Length: 399
Ligand SMILES: Nc1ncnc2c1ncn2[C@@H]1O[C@H](COP(=O)(O)OP(=O)(O)O)[C@@H](O)[C@H]1O
Ligand SMILES: O=C(OP(=O)(O)O)[C@H](O)COP(=O)(O)O
Image 1 (cartoon, rainbow, N blue to C red):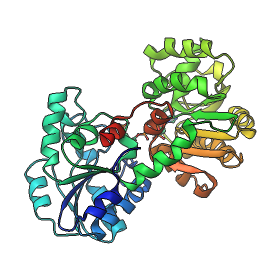
Image 2 (cartoon, rainbow, N blue to C red):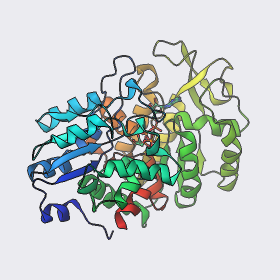
Image 3 (cartoon, rainbow, N blue to C red):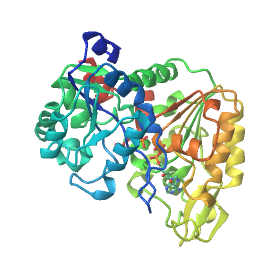
């Protein structure tokens, strides 16, 4: 990568200078209490932030959280993240209650050397994710005011052509943070000649995002195991009924084509845990994949599927896993994710886990993080990187 790094910036000297850092602080929150359930993404950015504060920079951090619709939405406020970031850094983090307005300007202006500010959720502003270049650019202009230099350490968002990821870099001297560099270094080992068999395991809920990636990955992998919310669109494409499970009707045809193109490569669940409702106390049963009752939804893969997936993972030399196999946040639907995670950890292969929720699942289920080769903070980002796509956030750093 011909890009300048945080070390290059530090070598220039940052004492007393304003540095804008894009981080991916999109952490999972408890639906009821709003509390942070896994702070892995906050911890992952600490090396970059500590290096900057230690060198006396005035650091302004920006991030998205969830997918608010371009306007303030209290359930997606970054305030709890500011508190947690402060605890982890061991210093108060000044929180701006808007992103580029009066609060942001006065908070950043008030920073002393070595202090940190966190701006409110970038996605409270329509300009952040706009497809209109001028609208994105106008928002990027407002953000760029907060830095004399820009550091991108938001690996989980480098696949997004968003104002804070892409457009700001064009407006300021730009540098890659420690996390971005580390992620790219590890993932690049999978884009060359991974040791075979190379098995990819996909799950989670961002179905349409990932279907495009499957298309590109399919020729390069030996086996693709699909569980989680992903699998129902594939099961439907096989002509099965999926009840009220997560389904992207408009992608059914794409899934059918994918399966026809690579017969035998894609492995789907043969049994699923089907529930009455999306709730931890919902009545549920394990049913055959071709017997999901019309009023029920699949919230986990079943035990026979776990055993089949584990067998397919056994001889693998390289494994990439993105996306939980079920709604692991609810105990009755966590068995599939646990079973597959254990099979991956015990496989002896070089293993990479990617994705905010997948990494959170590893920790939430009490699995030993060190039994995985690399735990990436980005799911979509790592998949698109593996696909060989030019990622907007990386391209912006290269320019
Ligand atoms: N069968 C399912 N139905 C609905 N949601 C699911 C299902 N299986 C997994 N999920 C959800 O998918 C979410 C993670 O998806 P995703 O964001 O794609 O993963 P990652 O962050 O690891 O890339 C989890 O919150 C999990 O509850
Ligand atoms: O959670 C994220 O991605 P991931 O779920 O693919 O790991 C990133 O924060 C990007 O979020 P987005 O998919 O809403 O752009």
